[in-house]
Image (cartoon, rainbow, N blue to C red; front, side, top):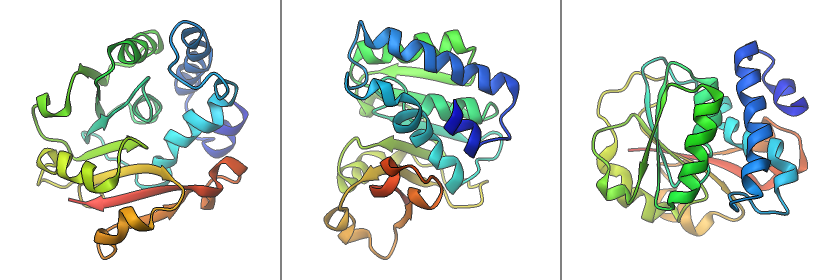
Length: 206
């Protein structure tokens, strides 16, 4: 885990071991279920684990924060974030049962106790969360409509509760209606690998 350890030297031995479990298990699972593109699985550390952890560079969640990962697929960005934040609760939601099964197995084998899972549509989710996170799931306006009702009014973090999305490419059209509200952060300001040149964090308080 050369790259993760370079950017996150503060990780404990346990956290390094948990991420090591992910490095081992995702390729094994990918041979059975196509959770990550077959061409991309060799780039697991940078393109998936490190990409997920970019959110840590943007905001530090305080203990007790609650986060929903919408459209988590095989567990991104939720599982790497759950490793980094053992005192934060993560609820991972996806409509594809076989991908969620992979995330559940990896969380179990990594010994993560701060993660819950829900198979089905987001409309079936109950409760409130401080933040909703997602990685390239859907256009921002659609996401905002879907998740606004889940955001708790009680704020304990340095930034107001809201939506945190990992996105890439030209976002001008998506962001046009939120230009006075959304904050866009270039991940290349944190990580220097070429993959991150077009990758962004979009934060929208809700």
